[in-house]
Length: 70
Image (cartoon, rainbow, N blue to C red):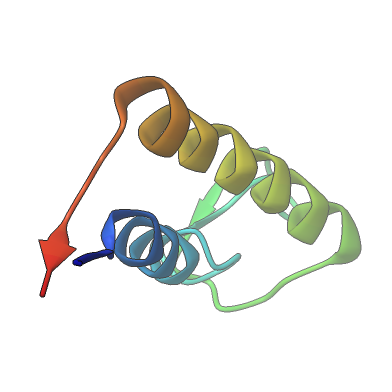
């Protein structure tokens, strides 16, 4: 019996890449989008959480990313 690590790997990579302020922040404090500013706000966390959930759902449910180890 093998374990499906696909959803776990996708979630970890998206969590790292979509951390507000790491690569980009949407919306930022002064503009619509800023890159690499390492600041965050409550609305930015909410927007990034919605983007994370949407991309994770598309990759895991619709496309069906699977990585089997075992």
